[in-house]
Length: 258
Image 1 (tube, rainbow, N blue to C red):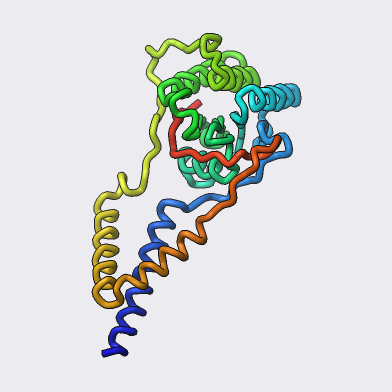
Image 2 (image 1 turned 180 degrees about the vertical axis):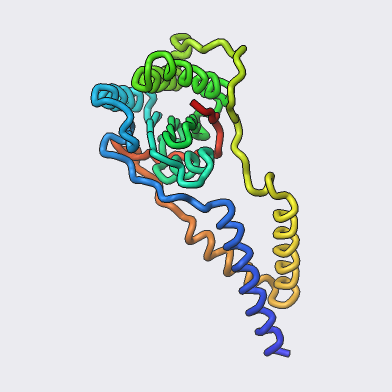
């Protein structure tokens, strides 16, 4: 009987581990992402802006950080998303870089190959820079990019974001929204796009959990949860200049083509 219990526990461990790995793989499959530059606020990896634009953004980002007591607005351009959606990429990058002290952070991301843009908003600024306002800013970016070029468009939208988080939203001019634009306020998810597969996975995990409770009193589940918690811990940032402040994003913001 003891051998049977041990064998059952071993099998449950394997199944639960496989299920957990599958869930993590679906939800947290992160593409290769760069580290921030020394300027932190200006990260033109795709090399689309000139030097003057970069200097302006870096200075404004630093002054915004000081005036907002830790708020960080970060610009990033990349060559390609590498198969990820822009929502997945921006959320993963935001959390990897820990943008914003006390979650007061905003990421302005451009992907040049896919011609997509996104404003990712940290928890601390979700009531300050709403999804609707983020969408309006991206529409404005697209229009300015067509009319005046990408340097002018990026600097204008970056300035607008800094004005909003600094409490000066009255200085921001929003475009007319009558034109039809391709945008997405919320990102998609595997579980929403594949409900049948998600339901099967949940049922399998629940059955294994019940078996674990019956046969081992939940010991296997407890061990696996401890392992997952240990592997997902991340140290908080110190809020220093040119580094992330420890902020997190839950996926708020808006995406658009340009």
